[in-house]
Length: 157
Image (cartoon, rainbow, N blue to C red; front, side, top):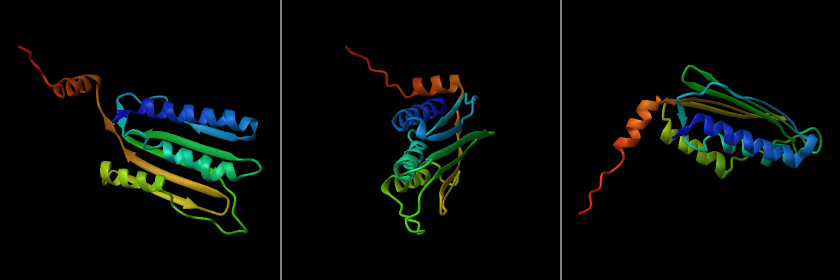
């Protein structure tokens, strides 16, 4: 597990890099929680969804690419809503699930069994990801106790 703060910072830095790439052509709205103390999450769990927005959404839009990301905390549950514009080819959605999203689904099933909800919807001009994940809360003392109990004492003669 990694601190939620670290995971959110990584998403912010990734989006900032993409903004540089797109210049002022990209419309991005991000709302992240400012209080995330003591919450921990599996590393790189959220980033693949954001990467897909750019890879499969905005990169294919010739005009007005946009992304809207909202992450909030409701008690100990992280609630993420991620939407991005997309184009449809001749009015037909090109829906196929790649290895990245399949890997995230498997990780969610392994690490957050019965503690998550994931819905991915594809509409004609928008792609929507709704994710709820029950986070782990670790106080600083518990974390230091956990770290010290996992260390092995070695004595040398």
